[in-house]
Length: 108
Length: 120
Image (cartoon, rainbow over all chains, first blue to last red; front, side):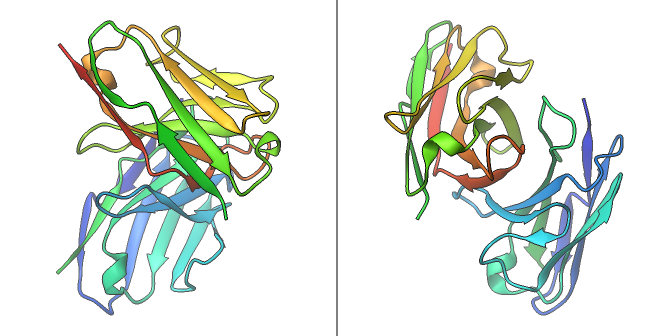
């Protein structure tokens, strides 16, 4: 099973600042990595697939990068609606499909 | 637009069974792989089960293998999760999710979820 590890667990950022979230896979997943955003009381929403391809309707301030075992989600200028929990997920080698533990982006 | 609406959650005693449903609309259901993903209270996301677009291939997390069964009715645009021998640790919000295509393995669209609570 591929283990996904996200860091940090919590990220405190001021509105307008840049946020950088990390995701590491226990073995290479090529570019088969997705990012999701989840706000309290809501279902997750797909942000990024293929490590760097934004989903339909996702603002350009969200960008993904990386391949192999190291991945990054960058939010270039945090808006109030971006404070949420973010999850990475690998789909290179499954079952099982596996998620990271999440990074909570909170207001500083 | 794509809509996924889960139903069937509730409070159930440990050891009993429950069946969840997910009604799909706004897309060609029979062309997409489908999944169940759950989230225990205050915890992260856990993939539970997946089924190919035509039902020919099904996969399960080890934590539910042998107890849960995923199925679909493409004529009714509905996904199911039959859950047997429920345990306290199965308590979670269960989300239905749609694949990008037949079975890529990521979740392009999500339902709003249905809460399953397993009591002792």
